[in-house]
Image (tube, rainbow, N blue to C red):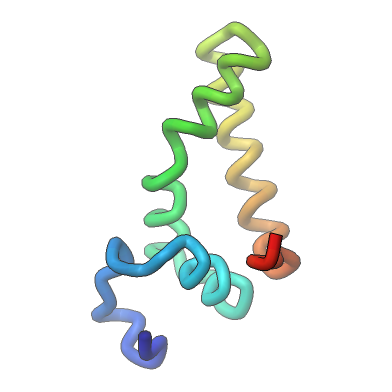
Length: 79
């Protein structure tokens, strides 16, 4: 994958690892949106399981994504 042509890339073809590696270097909103799109349902589902309230789970999922965004540069793909 050649990241120099990021504007024209089809992010759906990238793996999660490729997306997180790139985001750790350069926060691209379209690429982050692809990551959210892929995992939003499971994040909300996990939040609902914990708090048993859909509205609170929605709010918590937003907090999860804010944390992901602020901590993405520290992410390690070797886990």
